[in-house]
Length: 167
Image (cartoon, rainbow, N blue to C red; front, side, top):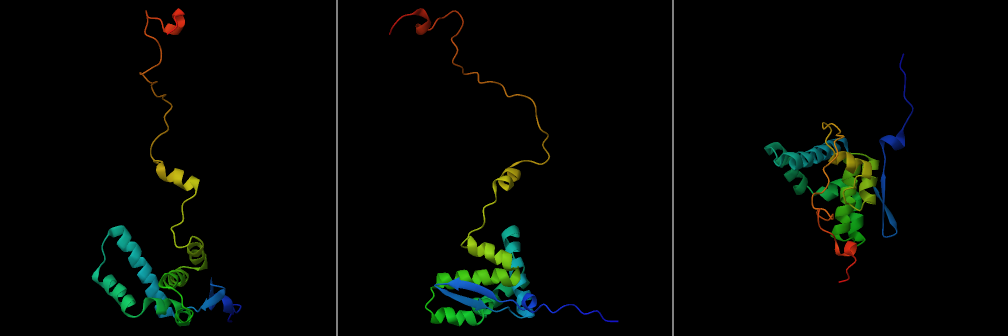
């Protein structure tokens, strides 16, 4: 007996709509081989950022991506459309990076990148506070010592205000 899943055409064959200058460009999905290469490229970027080095195989992957027209690969026919419509390099690069996020990750990641205008999202207050705390330190109930540089008058002397003199 064979059980067949329901057809999911739009899920398995999505198109990324990118609005720019009043037009929505439709970035098609890349083929499986290209998608896997793009994922390795993203992993290489993370590895380089963390380890500050790349192995020779990864360097070759990055070189191939540059040689074979990275933006043409991630944008497909939208690359030529953008050029024909007079897009700037900055726009082409940003739209291409968004498409890369979509191909290698998912729509939500691409949308977050797009909405943040390419900037890394800032963590919310709770995440920032958690990041600054040390998880292993025990809470302390000992009060800190008060300041020794005080505003009190030394014993045996009186302030001018207390003596009633005017300055």
